[in-house]
Image (cartoon, rainbow, N blue to C red; front, top):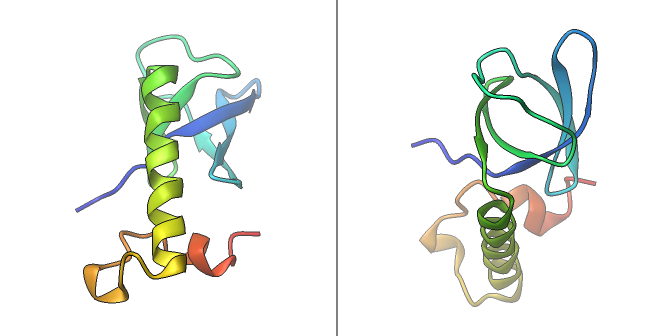
Length: 97
């Protein structure tokens, strides 16, 4: 299973490559596979270096709040390690900084 966390577009260069922010982690991704216009401030879902889909800003922000709550629940023990880290272990440990 692939878990895609909404990523905010921070900047776009002349090669159609975007700098995105995913819960504080920044990386560059290609926008070439998206059929619609993407602008700074939009949210996209990414997979292996490519933005695959632009998503609604409201839904993206709601999803990010859920991910942050899951990470907080893992950190305080409300969710145990036995329940799986859902790819958020690095955010709980702080290694994303």
